[in-house]
Length: 180
Image (cartoon, rainbow, N blue to C red; front, side):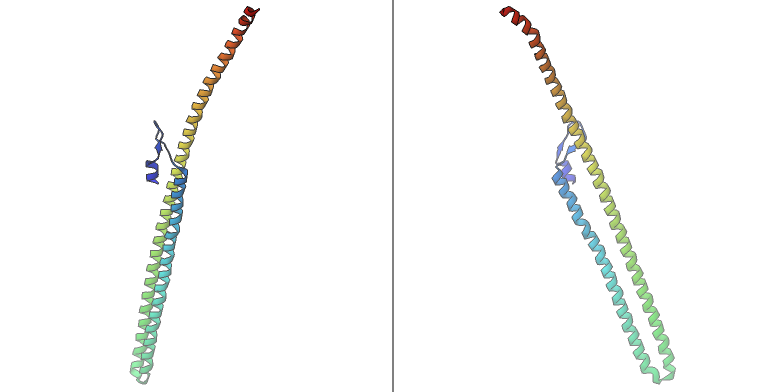
């Protein structure tokens, strides 16, 4: 958009530039086209977070199953049964803590990215509105200048026409009386 504005016709003695509306609309469409990509990125991050959580759950389940199998093998040995149960519980707690940490970190990252994307979207929207308003003001001023110039020219033409008609009315009676 900056190149469009800098490359467009500048209205002399003003800080306004006439911008090709179609090109500006093309740039706005480009912005609209790219915004879904940012949201798509956020959706992919959410999807990746869910995959990580799912993998962590699978890993936890595998660890739990492994611990339970080990505990089952040790059932025959009374002294080791209690140790196995305690170890399985520790592993479960550790895996649960790791899952919770990974989940919290993923959610925090997604929130950060969503906030950043929202801020960027708002900033782009604000800038676009300001640019559109500036373009509208410039177009209005240009149109007003053109209309004022036309009004002055038409007023001058009307003055010339009135003077010509008045001259015709002043000259006519004397020309008419000389012909008689």
